[in-house]
Structure formats: C-alpha cells, structure tokens
Image 1 (tube, one colour):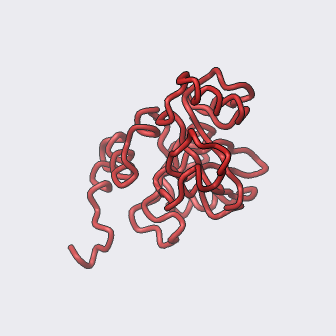
Image 2 (tube, one colour; image 1 turned 60 degrees about the vertical axis):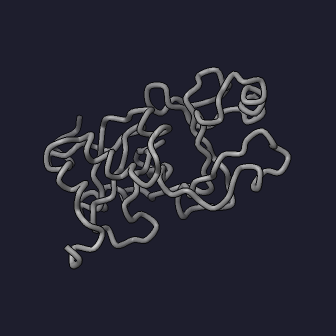
Length: 191
C-alpha cells in the first residue's frame, strides 16, 4: 500500500471502492460507493454501485428479453453507454477487477449464459455511463478528503446489498471511525 502519497490513507487502485465522504456536496456522488475499474497516470474510472435508475435492461436493449434487471447510473460521463460487472470468469474477454468480480466481456456470451441458466441475472449489474477522472483529478479529490478508499471489496457487498444501505454497509465494513461516519445524518442540522 502507498501510505506516503495519501497521508496514511489507502491508495486508490483497480478493484478498490471509493466511498463518498458523508457531506460531499456533489449530487452525482452524494452517499455513493464507486467501484474503481482503473487508476493510473492517465486517469481513473469506475461505476457508482448504489444509484439505481428507473430503467431496466429490456428498456435500454429491447432485443434482450431475458435480462429484466435494473440499470444503475454508473456516473455522469457518457450516459448513453451501457456497461456491466459480474461474478463469472466464464464470460470471454472479461477483465478481473477484484477477486470474483469482473468488468465487461462478450455481451452475447453473457446473454447466452443467462438464457441457459449458467449465470443468474442477479450476478450481473448494468450501468448507464461511468464515473471518470482525468490525470491527477482523483488524487486531488482524495487530498481534499472527498473520498474514502476501501481496500476490501466483497462480491456480496457489490451484488447482494440493497443500494439504499450500500454506502452505510461499506463504511461499517471498514470499522473504527468509519463505522461512526456510517451513522452521520444526511443533513447534520436536523440532528
């Protein structure tokens, strides 16, 4: 872990979570959990895991009738693109992000595997758009304490946790002071 650069904090890396600090004022990222899929000198990108949209996959891709899953808002960038993460290594060209968590791959293979009951639809999350940061941008936001980096990515948190409690559960999983943060009210003036 790179402690020196991040003031004794965990460095962002592919497969780690970015958890928004309790009072982050950006409406795109208020109380969000982002799965980082890439972080390097050229920038960073990932998907917001806990912002369901009002759409289902069948409404975005009408020809795919077997996938009636909710589509999540992956972030404010290119919301006309569809992405997916899943927990099956058998999808060709998928990129492993964390243990048993994969990004993308051959979409037709994925649909076939769902149609033939090789993959349950609950093992897949779909996203419109993504969250992206230019070179150094995420590092600057981390220095401003806009994000908390979590190095423990549980596939159960990603796929089996209700979006409404994911932010709190992610912080609780870190223990210590982060468990306290998980109970902060949305508006501290109401406390």
